[in-house]
Length: 167
Image 1: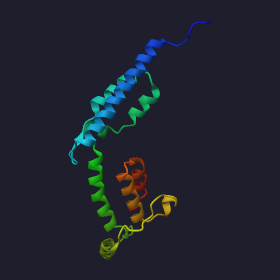
Image 2: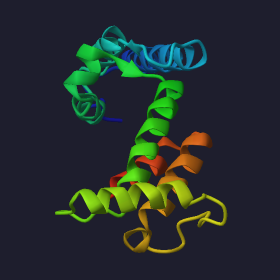
Image 3: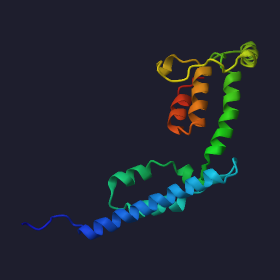
Image 4: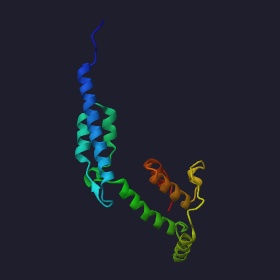
């Protein structure tokens, strides 16, 4: 049987995988810890945990590419907890509802009309799932779907809905 051409011995490969797994577990644990016991306005640094993952993944191009996609501001300024995101979304939702009917070049009258409309509009009976193409949904429907997704812990879906907002 010919010798293996892999530069890693099986034992070394396993140790590197275990090291990478431990680094990811540490990052995940820190994020979960801050989500449970956090001040909604606080941001938490994950720079040391991400550096540990980067170091453990030094030979893995896939993981290195993923780590490189983390915005530098998330490392320098920290990340917000899910509780903080929910609180912030409540503020954003309120503002979006107020200006939902304002066209791109709307004047003061359009703002006033949109504000009054937002006060008279309720979330009852809104669309509950995105079986309809997202591009055809109104601002109020997108906000409702984003809020439902956020409350269910689906940050990916909530982000997709918010990214569809126009104006």
